Amino acid sequence: MHRGRQGEYRNGSHKQLSLMTHTNLSFTIGATLVLASVVRAQTAPLTPYQTLGRGVLRELVETNTTYSAGSTTKAAELLAARFRAAGFPANDVQIVGPDTGRDARNRNLVVRYRGRGTRRPILLIGHLDVVEARRADWVLDPFVLTERDGHFYGRGTLDMKNGAASWVSALLRMKQEAFVPAGDYVLALTAGEEGGGGYNGVQWLLAQRRDLLGDPAYVLNADAGGGELRDGKPIAMDVQAAEKVFQTFRLTVRNPGGHSSLPEKDNAIYRLARALDRLAGYDFPAQTDAITRAYFARTAGLTTGELAADLRAVSATNAPDSVAVARLSARSPFYNAQLRTTCVATMIEGGHAVNALPQRVAATVNCRMFPGVDAATVERALRTVVADSAVEITRADTAVPSPPSIMPSAVEDVIRSVTGSIWGPLPVIPEMETGATDGLFLRNAGFPVFGVSGYFVDPNIPADTRAHGLNERISVKGFYDQIEFTYRLLKAL
Image (cartoon, rainbow, N blue to C red; front, side, top):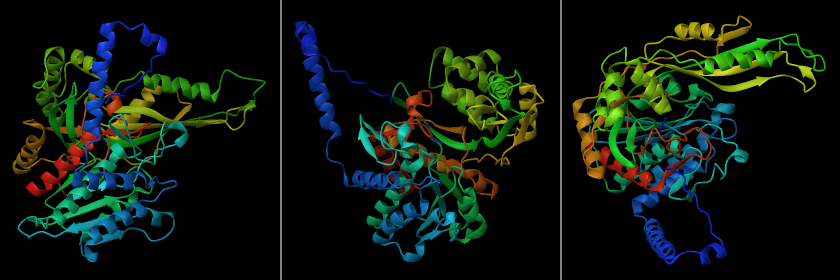
């Protein structure tokens, strides 16, 4: 789970042009020249490595890997062909997973890059599957990589085919250079992370083919972490060290129904709507832990004024200042999610005929629980907030928490050094991922997991954070910087 702005162009008429003053016309000519120079810069020839990265990203985006209609197996086969063509032994490039039924379309790619054996392997993870995308809702085809206004558009560009492309491109470049790392790299690009047939991915590998993963010293996860922008400038490199816990509830209202010509006040849709409205107005209690306090404290040093004061206030204690919490929560969804458990309605269904009163209405409420908060506590809170015994509340899945990971200082030093080589000196800041990743299964298997990505966003700007949303996109320059960061990081480690 990752974190600009959309440009807009309007064409003036000839009449408007004729009414311009000499000053305005001069400004327009100047702006045109500047725009022309920007276009020339953007169309400058790509380096061979950028061409490789762009090609891998295009191949991944243009392979539909949704669970409903796509195939991670197809994406894995395309990438496997690249690795074999680069000289990786056949035994070191494997496509594994269930062989029968629908799940055969959603298998995993595991690649081993052999090193000198002077350190334990490092496991690199990411997922190939993406959330659903309806073409009718998008401005552009979600399964065509489109370059426009300085961005790459397409489903998965941000979550997380850019990360998968960066791992693949870096390993292929290193192989071309005949670089031999100190120890093995194991790349696992998996299925099921976005909810469809989830057992086929990391869970399946841990249970069925753990031998392919080996005994890694630690895991780097490109599905979390990443650089942070403020006012368009890099201010920090965030490394994910913990994550929230995924838990879904179902809210259901049942009713005898009847003929729509004889409406009653007790309507299942209205009843559920009132319950959801009460939920919409509720905030879970604010809290922090060692990871989020460190994030807020270090981020405070990168800003000024009221924001800096509020960040320091919430970093001081596990019971943060309520006024600072309120201001930060109102400032952005990102800060709000860093400060508390959240629950939000994501799907709704109900009714069976246009001329009948609804007999059953249900809503899906997805919760991201703060580490240490259990599902029973959240369920009790939901029942209190809904305050209606006619609304059934049930758990739709089973929450799986995971412990935080403590990063070795040597690894942090390498990340800091590589970051500085591209963007200049920046602090490395631990963060809690507000979403959920496959890293939790590996943490629970005993491996430290660190979310590391070379892609920068401003988490407080919605246009930067379109993962799972419409018209998902990433910055073109940001992507090329990301693949360069990944290559330098793997060589330095």
